[in-house]
Length: 113
Ligand code: FES
Image (cartoon, rainbow, N blue to C red; front, side):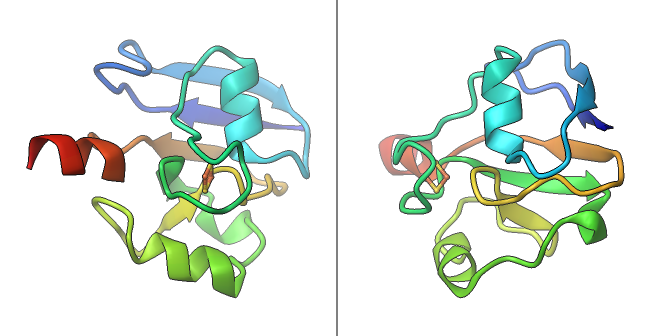
């Protein structure tokens, strides 16, 4: 069991959140959704969109490495960072995580820029 700290995001999680007792091996996206953090997930967690993009601020190295298909998709994500992951693909490891949800998804970026 581990812990995920979600940094505040104005729409999705305005106050930020700490989620305790997170099971190892679960995807970050599933845990956030189960805890009412409505992270976008346009392809229903099937590694086909990038709307679930998160930046892992702490604990990145505890996650299993991204697959080639995840890496390819991430290249299209808004606000890509060296510790970006697709939350539906990143399985929780043994370390506590701190997650930042980017201000925009690729869907927002298309609408407003
Ligand atoms: S929900 Fe589409 S890639 Fe994660």
